[in-house]
Image (cartoon, rainbow, N blue to C red; front, top):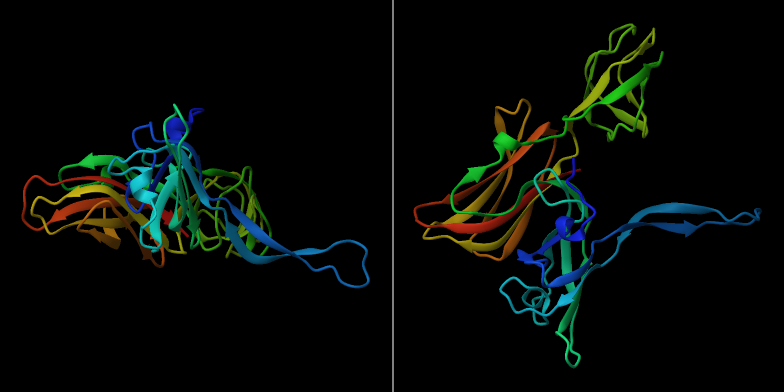
Length: 325
């Protein structure tokens, strides 16, 4: 569950290209992450006096907006957004509902758009900036919260489990495919694999693993020809089919002679045997990157970081997450 609290300072974070814009709490006093707005077109034609609107299938994202006090610290808003940065889209990770492993984040790429400094007599200098989102914004979970590391490590012992929670199954319908109704929203996407357990009375039994096709927030179908409906039990999501984007932010990096810092993203069916999804490699910091992982993403996900090659005394500040599609 997210660790969201009533206090913004406990929840908010934003890293852009490895720069930690929130910093130590004395730099940013306002942050707005991008919201998506569906594009709607009016299609009212002749023969009706009622306006008709249709969705175009396109989404537009708000700009990322940051406001705070001027600072020239290494990873400050000034260094991150000041005029003169190359106009290359940079990877960002941000969130407003907690910032520990398992909490949600938004990830994507954005261009520096506006940066301005404001000064008033007898007042601290202010700095405002905004970034234009250049791609789809992905919604994922943190696998590694922002932290300093001085050695190789991973999160496999504290992996993220998409099947940690279940929903109660109300009924299975007499149909082919059978419609499964749940007591609360199931949170599935079409193509997800679910495990149904404890369902009673159906012919044949539907307990086991099935690929779901979503109908509504509380109904989905499974490819089973049910001739006698059943009731009860639970449904648990155990894998997704749309791939994922894996994100890494590195605000600081000292290699100590090592070749690079490599992030490796993993998934697992059983939380024991792990398979590599993708890697992101860094030789400098601040920096950020992401990698697209295609195909099925299994129930458990984790990240590892490795200072490759020979060296001594490495250190880095890192954050990583994964967004299933």
